[in-house]
Image (cartoon, rainbow, N blue to C red; front, side, top):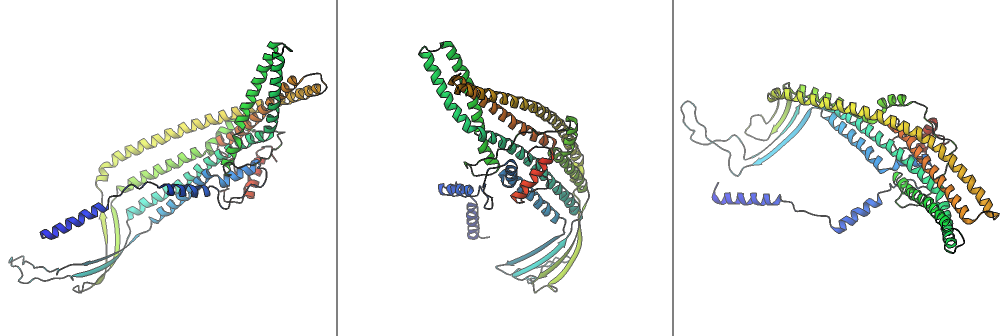
Length: 496
């Protein structure tokens, strides 16, 4: 290569390398605004049904199953796993490779030959190739070893689909539990928010009156201060409960994928009966061992590890690849430009034989780790079931007690109101008892919402679906709501 050609070659190489450098390109403000506007516009699906009336519990659960964005992530994760499985199954097919090449020289591809016996070089050069050459090949080959490995990989991909389904089931169960909790807290907010605001205004008047009487010397100052302290204590507790309940509707809107900040009402159902669970903790634990998504998931992982072991054992064998190739070459100097060729290639990775012992040690360690994880998870599941069942039983008793306390407080408040209307008692006593009655009802509502959450958490701990398992979320909203309603009615939820 001459110096000029060398310089030209180096210059072209430098330009090519310089062209490989990539500059940082941060998002522009216009791009950021465009992306933000696009995502905001797509928060609600175009086919999402609008909420036309008060939102009921089972409709809320149906909307969460159909529209919740976290659930859609899990659904797409299953679709991705299925696509990966379909792709891995294609690896079972033989390889069919088409290859084409075109080349052109700037001079003749000639050469001389040397006689091996005499060492004499031919006097004139000759060539067996054209200056311009093109050829094409179509090769069908099938590696027997790769087929076996691909078969195991396809089985692992099938297990990955099952793992994704169990992960979706766990997410949906938690979603249904959260929806139930947020719904009942929203019911409490709907029932009592107006009454709380009214009684707080009356309480402010009662406090002002008490301060005026005490400061004016019309009542005992110590008794007035004690009254104000007791009233302020129950007012503060009521405000704290109201504050806690005020977040319920935004949470419910997020779970059911209503527009953030949307105003809506919830249906206030009758609470004459409490949900009931008849199975013992021991029975529930046995059900959890068979149904918890996490336990099934780790079993599928153990399956995949066994398939990995089989694949590694298969890699110890030699690779055998039969092939058939159809070729076309436009070189006119060839006697036959079109021809078929067939054969078999055999290769053997001898290094894998030396690594086999180490690989077995790695798989043994992985197997022991997965088994330890499975045992730890089994113990954790049993503990969770016992705790959730004990918590449910205690909350059921507490809910009964708070219901009775709220009923007695309401009766006292009504009696004091009647006495106040007849002039037998004053505003202070009336307001104090009314605030106490509202607070007792708030406590009952909060406890009832907690009981409903605990009720759903028992099923979640056991691994029984908080929704009909055959539902995918693609069904109509009415179909989902009806199926969820029927399932919970059979479980003894008490809402019909």
